[in-house]
Length: 532
Ligand SMILES: [Zn+2]
Image (cartoon, rainbow, N blue to C red; front, top):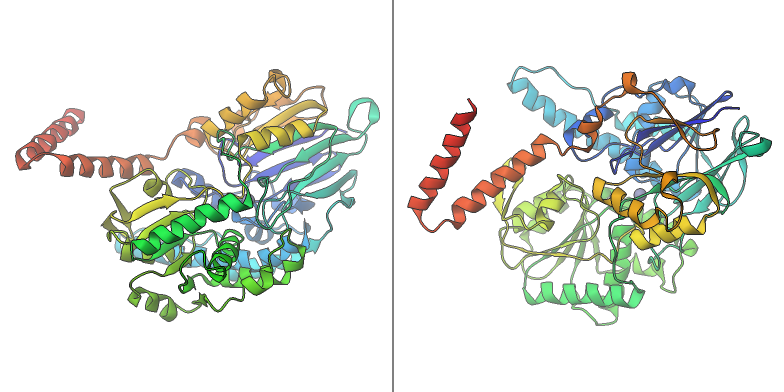
């Protein structure tokens, strides 16, 4: 039996996770994620899949995050008729997250169409609607961790707790008779791997003795100081006390699912113990409010001494479901806490709060996770003096802080150790799901030290490899790539443009007087004219 894998997403990018496995007997997907970040990548969400959805027998979903699950409603709408296998935790989260993603797409497209209409441009239809997302939920089937099941004829699969998010899994696959000497071909897809000592999740687990490992690389170039629950809480407490001392709000952009619940658990516990000043904690995200409910239902499964169910029901918490309640938060002054999505500030209600507070010195913004290139969160993290929000330029005077201890991802050494623990790995390690520096960083950590350098592969979007040979065999895909390789890795010109405008503003403001400002402007103008 021949087996191939096609990297249909998260290959030299950090979003859109999707691996297509094909045998003589059928096809299965591991994940079907939405592309996020740069516009060229996001455009792929609107174009056709690089396969026929009706030909896919099964989807194995590693976890609920939208960059892994977010194109499932489109897959179902485009003709997929198989089952989507996932853990109970993943299904419970997807039942809120996918409809939420559908309604975000509907409202984004409505806004875009209003703009298009004024410019006489054609209407755009959403990738899928909230109704499509609800319809796709019927395809989900629950499976247990560490239990084999038949994924499609000749292929069995088993899920392992990846310690990254409620319900998250690494997926072990066995292709009957396709390995050396008629043995099964064994493949492990990491999904996203959690860090050591994560608040609510156990450390990741997975099998050993594989032909191939496909590993995520999100933080492959990062080497964090060791994190303990005590250090994490001390750091958070220090940030909360500093925000209180500044006598303004503490804005926490956070992923609605898991990060928000971890922050609530720690914040409420610190308040209850008197380690930080007590204040209302506005939970300003309908999705986060629902996800908090799912976490309460699963609270007995969490790996913690804390009473998660009780902490998530604290009277300090003020869930603001409606837009009216959300807008009313703007009337608050002095110290209060606002937790809102999205974690990278590229969408969601956090943008209203940032617009209201970023220009004020007494406000604090606490970034709590990965900030992808091109997102507002990344600009803030990089120290931008001004940013654009909803078409308006907003000066940044607020204190911009970050806390890395809540990361949902293993760092470089933890990823390398996770890969090392899977040995022996006979044929190859594919590094996916990372930006360029992260992929190179993880490759440096494992090449020669953990597996021979010749067995480390960094595929690019739409690459196909044959897996049944003694080493992965690249198959020529030059005629069917969706994007040229340079376009996958290059930063979008939109991002370069925003950065350039911010830099020009910076320079002009920093100039000594109006005369020197005039000189800078004339020089820029000459450079432009030289291009004509
Ligand atoms: Zn994830």
